Image 1: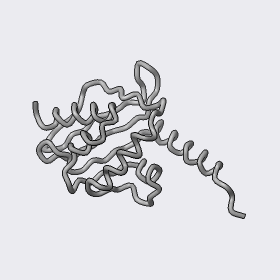
Image 2: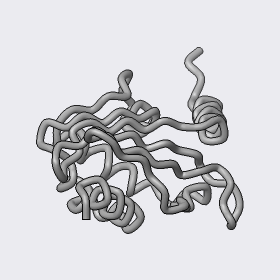
Image 3: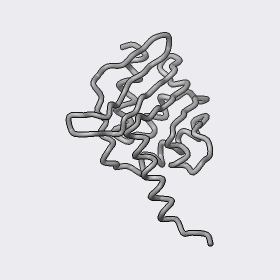
Image 4: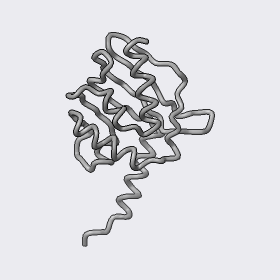
Amino acid sequence: MTDAEFIYARWHEAARSRDVPALLALYAEDAELESPLVPVILNRASGVLRGHAQIREFLEEGTRRRPNELVRWHRDGRFLSAGGLLVWEYPRATPQGEQIDILEFMELQGRLIQRHRIYWGWFGTQTLIASALRKQAQAPSEH
C-alpha cells in the first residue's frame, strides 16, 4: 500500500466513524488544515489551523455537530496522487441523493498529512451560506 493509498483509506474511515484520535494521528505535529468550516465551527476569522491542538479542536467540534443529512461520505474509489499530493472528491450527486460536494487536497510527508485544504463545491457552499443566514436571523438584534 502506498502512502497515498494509506491516507486515502484511513482518513475516510476515521472521519466516517468520528474517530478523532485516529484522524489526528494522520496529521504531522505541525500540520496545517484549511476549511471554510473553520470560521463557522470555531467562530474564528481565519479558516486556517496550525498544529495538533488547533486541528483537534476543529475535529472534535465538527464531529460533535454531526449528523448532517447532507454528509453521506460517498466517493467512487478514485483518487489522484503524484509527488506527495493526494486529491479526491466527495461528489454532489450520489446514488442516495445529493451530498455536500467537497474536494480533499492533501500534501503528504510519508504517511502523514502536512497540509490539508478542503474545497467546497457550489452545492455545499450554498448550504453553508443558508446555514449562516439562519444563524444570523436567529441572533438577538442589538438595538
